[in-house]
Image (cartoon, rainbow, N blue to C red; front, side):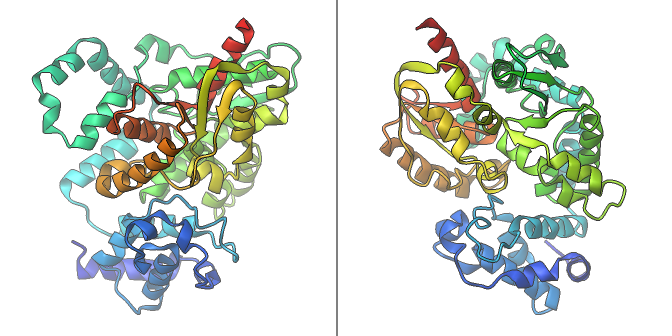
Length: 445
């Protein structure tokens, strides 16, 4: 519960830190309403829409309302998908307002002891340290390979967990060994004629739990004629911190990444996770008030490019034969890849170029699947409603393969497939993993 003293501190910070010009930029036109999943899911509740949340923020700044628990809850329920931004005629940067508001609340309220322990462990003790990430993911690998997983399922231990977590446990990828996670390349040559020198942002979860997807990414880049450098000093992108009211930590991670990449003479910095890429590409906003880092941040963000964009730009799909056994493919947009990085066409171009596979556009492919970082864990009920809608649309395509471009979206769609009992008929796959399959199959034809 937020105390009166905490509310006073929060209100003072809102008046000092919130961008009032951006708040006033909202014309209250309502164009954002049909694009907002929480507005729709709530039964068209105004306070759960972008327009409504902006009005609440402005009311706190003006002292019209107190930043009470209802206000905080409205912000907590927001997915942060930013689907409102592309449709806003005034160009309101809602995501920036949301992150600032959450940071103010988080820094000026006293969390419970369990919450403080979890936040400190996750945000400060784990994600900024890749060796610790490897250790944590390594424990999961031990659980999978040692027989503990089979035993836990057999004796019914998992029945003590919420249904969503039980299902999520089933769809987690097979974790690589510690040896595989530790021995990662820092440089890879282009295959064939070199067209670009690129740097690869390997990420924290992507280079541990989803290591095979990273390997597929670098292989595609090599085949596309890219020399690749992978700076070992890079760290977590900071997205989870920035979205959860840990802005100071996000800034420190941003500085570490900028320093790691800025002297590599790379043409582009390539990402393969929509959530990471969207946060990286806004480092210039994150550090805009830091005179030492603002220009360096701008130079960094100017080079950020999603793997699908670089592949299309170099004509990879025209140079390499892509083919698969007959199947129907549908694509689920990563919200941040589409709404922040503005990448929507490139993944579809690549998928439509695969021979013998039929591409079908999914209705509302651009609506959030409900993953949203850790939203599907902390707001499970709301997340599952969104996932149920998404699975209805996925089934309507009669697709056998659902393609995503972000690890959180991938796990969420796999969760939906498992919940619906479709695991024998449908699969979820990251786009680069599917493209590697298509390259190998094409080579055999």
